[in-house]
Structure formats: C-alpha cells, structure tokens
Amino acid sequence: MTTNFLVVGGTGKTGRRVADRLRERGLPVRITSRRGAPPFDWTDRETWAPALKGVDAVYLTYYPDLVVPEAAADIRAFAELAVAQGVGHLVLLSGRGEEEAEACERIVAGAGTGWTVLRCSWFAQNFSEHFLLDAVRGGEIALPAGTVTEPFVDVRDIADVAVKVLTEPGHTGRLYELTGPRLLSFADAAADIAAASGRDVRYVPVSAQEYAAAAVEYGVPEEEAGALTELFARVLDGRNESVTHDVERVLGRPATDFRDFARDAAATGVWAR
Image (cartoon, rainbow, N blue to C red; front, side):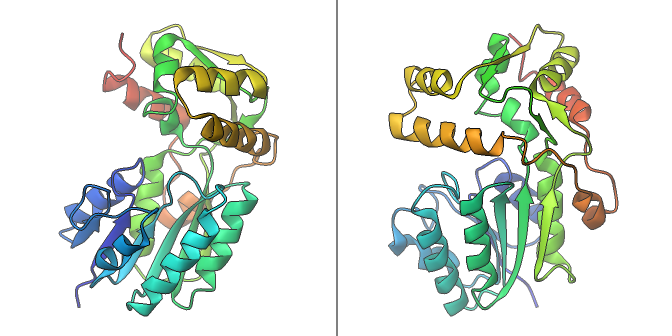
C-alpha cells in the first residue's frame, strides 16, 4: 500500500529537504505553503483539512516557532484533525531546551496515533540560510550567547532521520535528540566558517537588549524581536551543552561535523562577497 506524505513547512530548512528525499524515492509527497495547492496557513484553520486529505504520515513543523503562545493550541487542533482524518504517523520537529516545545511534544504523543519527536539543537544552516547569513557575509556574528557552547546539528542529518522514521518501522513512540558530534562556542563556529570561506568572520557577544534593538533596527517587528531574544536567553544559558548520539543511532553513521557543513556551504558560494 502506498503511503502518502504531507510535509508541513515544505519550503523551510528541514521541510524542503525531507520533501526532496521522499520524492527521490518516488514517494507521493504534498508540501504546504500559503501559496500552495491546496494552500496552508497556520493562522487559518480552514486550510488544514484539505491539506490533510488522503494523507497517511505527516512531517510536522510549526511557524514561526513552538515557543510562541498560540503554538500549543494550534498543534493540538492540528493533531486532532489529523487523527480524525486517518493519519497514522506524526513526526514533530521540536527544539531542544524549550519548555513550550516539550508541551507540544506531549500533545502529539497523546493524540492517539503513531508519533515520533525529533528534538533538535541549533541548526548549522542558521549561518548559511536566512537567519545569520547576512551577519556572516558582513563578517560579524553578534548574538547574546556569551561563551556558551552548542552541538550544532546539520539539517541534512535531520532530514535523513525524518525520512528514516517516516518510511521505516521501529521508530513509533520514540523521542530522538539530534545534535552534532561536538560542542562549539559561537566563536569556534565563526572560526570554522572563516577557515572554510577564506573570509574574516568573527563572533561578537552582545547583551540581549543590544540584540533586540539591532533586530528591530534591521526590520524585525518589535514583538517578534522580543520573543526571539527571550528564547535565546533561555536556550543559550548552557542547558544544551551536551552531545547525543541519536543521529548515529538512527542512521548508522556519525552526525555531520560543523567543519564539514562549513566546507560544503562555502563551496556553494553562499558566503561570497
């Protein structure tokens, strides 16, 4: 029997890679976006049912983040609708060290269908796609992270794990914490990017207030900037300074090292002047 897959957030960092991998296997995939067919919008629940029609398994990401106040109610309503429409497996992308995200994990786990949670550390691709790309190109990564270390995870590994748990048995009812293979400070990450790109890139620690002010000046809405700053203050407080081996446990190979991510990203020219 053919399994039909829905990728919620199919144009995002992990979602588009999950969709690509499923398509490469010749599997039927539907991705969501506001301009898709059918369209999908987290703020318009009337768009959810058409996207779920005929779907057997869902890769579930939430925009803008599971920490926002409305996330839990949306995840609950979506999970209930998915179960009512016969979805047999929900795979939730979650954030490591985020209490609100853990509440959403519990909602999915209690929804009454098969589930797997992928609880992830900070994405390596935050430096090469959207979030910190301009900062790297400008040569200065300013964040309220102090000297904390983080096991940056490559989103290619997340996508590989997601496809594995979506398409193979043995992962139902499991929570996987996905990290890279070593801890790096943000200064270490900047140094690896500089070495790979041949550019002068440095990390500059700033206060949460300085970061929020800079984000607003850059054009981020004040409410969103405040939420991001509050999130960074929590998840970059040292709570995630540990490495797991769940990527290797699922894939049978080590997690991708940050230096390999930086080398591959530099080779695309994304950090070129």
